[in-house]
Image (cartoon, rainbow, N blue to C red; front, side):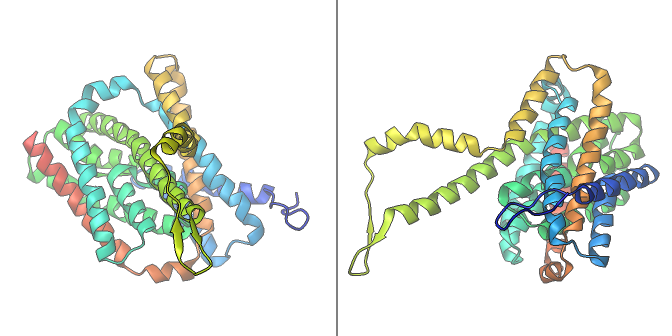
Length: 364
């Protein structure tokens, strides 16, 4: 299959370009089974980055890698909805919402304040913030296309979050013992303060099956927060784009070189309001709407239990494929310019999240 048509025509997908990240994801899935504390997703990203370091991606492969890292990823996120229901939120989810929401707020505010201090780009700061506060690589991969993050920023953010997931595997069980947590308390702690699902399960396993069950429910409810955060960021990006377009359209330069701003009456604004609302609604990613539809359907019990496990496995595989495609597009020369500051941001947010979770558990 040709990668490019006539001059000016959009590049096409290639079998090799699509198959490469999928094969890497298959390898990562096998490795993940032997290393459950790590899981398939980090392996997929790592393998993709290793291959990119040895043999940088060709321009002809970029459209295929982008397809895997976006379209297939969107499918994976929609499939996550089969594991969520309003019933989960109404029971243990609602009971732990104060802990989760406070922790998420502290993490995102901390990222917003610390990012500029550490002189880290807004996009990378956002990715590390949502990755630490919500659900690791899944949140990063979901938010990335909304804010227009590069493959280098995505790879760096996933790597930073993964490093501190490994740190949590070692440190959190010790902290739980020192604080005399029971299985339920530690399950909430692990489900709130650890990001990647495989790492959540592995961390909670130190306190037994009850801790694992609690941690999984808390983790799944945290996943819901992808939706409002994604919509908020999509609206923010849309607003910024509209403001930029508005300035270009409504500022004209007269013959004397001065700028004239065209006034818009209140009546004109009111007439334009329905169109603005419809325009902003179209800017919200469609896959997030489909995700909510699946969650709503699952809440009614219409989705058979037998579908949950295969759908979840396929979702994890597609996320791994997306991460491998992102890894394949990593440019290490550019990554070096970020230095160790993002790693420091990840460390500070990791401490903030853990400390906030411990404090909220004590208070509630």
